[in-house]
Image (cartoon, rainbow, N blue to C red; front, side, top):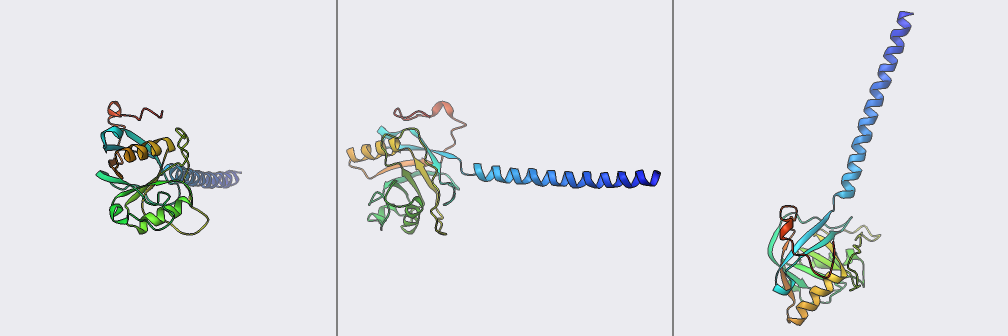
Length: 200
């Protein structure tokens, strides 16, 4: 009887060990899934010049292509790409070299735009919605069905923000703004100058 109890206890103990191992594996898998879902968070950037656009803007990183902004760029140019949809060869390639391109949504996939930008030696792209009334809907930028990828950062900007930036630059006869990207707003919430035309 005692040996039977010992065998049962040993068997129960082994089951308990297996159960605990499975629980640990499940917890690790869940953590990995959650990490992958939240790996690409929204970023913020600020326009330094021109003064009329001196606000903090929010953008959403592409979900499954491109890279993150691995460092902070201070006083870098955000240049309007020509053609603005960036679906074909870039005309103003010299001005975009080692700068960030401002691109309008439409005409081709988000990934196409990112690849064209990378070939033009931009260090990143901000793609704004072609709907200039969009002041609250952030599009989740995902890759197309091809196996291609892009190795520069790509972020989505609200259409309202993008068109306001574009119009202000056009009015000043400029093709670029000076930006700091990304910026950490958690340390300086009181200093954030949100654009008056959108609400976060």
